[in-house]
Length: 433
Image 1 (cartoon, helix red, strand yellow):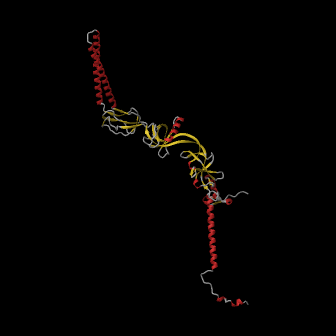
Image 2 (cartoon, rainbow, N blue to C red):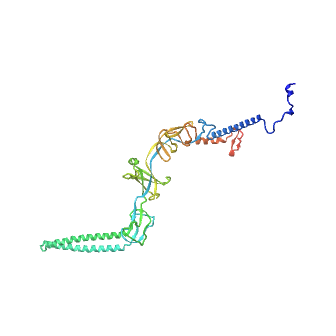
Image 3 (cartoon, rainbow, N blue to C red):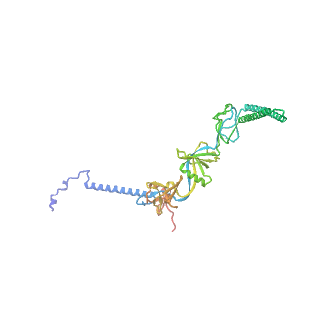
């Protein structure tokens, strides 16, 4: 018998472990298993997130050094005729503006026009009471006829005096006096004719006619009122609206370009747009430049004429003007493709392997949607137009067309079946051996 076994206490003498307190070794094992479980769950979650990002970027992985693939818009560098345009803000002004003012004073008896109607040159628009002017004309005619009779009698007397003078029967002084009387009566008759013409002209002025064709405005005087020749307000205003002019200002630095373009072309085309620059109102031709520069604004006034057959241009209307100087051939890209950085303008060029390269360019003439590139690109190259703010040099990109082509593969289930509508698996039909 072992001496240690002899001295060992009996099993009943060993005190039991306190209830509710597991052994220390069991607690360490449980903590270790919990940490391992959390690590496995976190790793699985990280893997699933990275895989989901890779699939959403167009591929199962992260090409380009571990970065997700970016979907971008693209465009092809092409040759085009780029218009050289001067944009300006203009005001529509009538080609002719006339205020109807009475030339004589009198009672307005008739108003023969409707407010806003189109009138023609020479059309009768209003009538002043003509009776006083008819009486004045008759009086002038009577005075002229009386003086003409006196002149005729004085001429006959002068002829008799000259006959008697040739017979030495009358003094020369009497002949000279009669000749002077004839001259005086001739002047009186001429004055009478002028007064008769004035009376006839005043009678014609009682008929107020349109001095020009155009649209007549609101009338300021009604029939029955006494009008005077010094009335500044007049009866109404006529504005010629077809054709019509547009006045605008151009920078003084572009005057030389306009003059050169005028020498190269018969007439420069001008387009009038509305305030939103979306609707085209009319097309016209450039007329002329002013003869001096406005020193306060550094601009020169210009004028263009429009036929305005549809009546879209209205006097004193504000419009946007586009003056086309010429068309120049150039390599063009969308305006959104060109970006500006610390080192100047640049674009992202899409390579054959679907990676992008940052390339510096020099911009030229630009329109609303296109921009000319004078240096840095070649015809046929593809550039990024959308999504460039998320790119860096050398990154891989996904084009919208390629992404759409890969979309039908997302629901495929391999050789075992296909996904139908609603995500349900659809079995393939059996094949003949």
